[in-house]
Image (cartoon, rainbow, N blue to C red; front, side, top):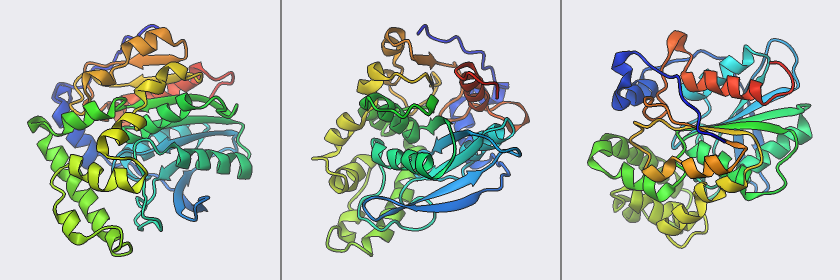
Length: 323
């Protein structure tokens, strides 16, 4: 599809990518009542799902996936859920393994290419619920998972009508490289601290697989992916994890209407994360590259973010019913 011309123009202060990213991650608040459901996965582990509902009974659902070290209650999740609830769509915010406030049961957890857990959530919804129209929206790491899921298989359920990927690190090696640059040191160190704490909690239950000494020697996100992410999830090393899990290689095969929104001033994304060629050659793939927005920082009026409004607009456009 042709590249979409973006209309996003935030207030002057939020044209700075760093400011919009930090404000959105640390300051924004969204009030939303959610009900938690725990599902058991096929390997015996669990996922916690945070549900919120439209005032009227509906057959429509949006499934939301968070980013690295996020959860189902983060404002970028609840903001979308609340907006869609107000427009007649139920929402379920997925907490990846170990992200709901309780350490998961297996040594493995989640990663940027773990589409098998998304598949289990979708299968659960189709089996246990009455939704006939399902939409997907992912943020950052969750965006990569959704794009990979849609492109790696030929059996996407017919109930999935459209998808939106925001701040999507389509090329993981490039995104990892950017996170290790000086301009992103504050973000890099914050991610690493959170990941290290989570890993130390997990190590208490898996002392044979991982030692505290090994964790103490993790000094970068590269180290973390080499020591834990790759080894716990069946990859040779971090580079193989990045290569096999990147969604960029799967974009040509997507057959579900999909919108990617990646800001040009997103300091987490490398140039490969703007898949212009892939979008131009795939009628189902739409790419919007706003000048501003940072990483998941598309601040707009009334605490409703631009990417949330665009998700609703895109899904309306690709829905045979009016929302």
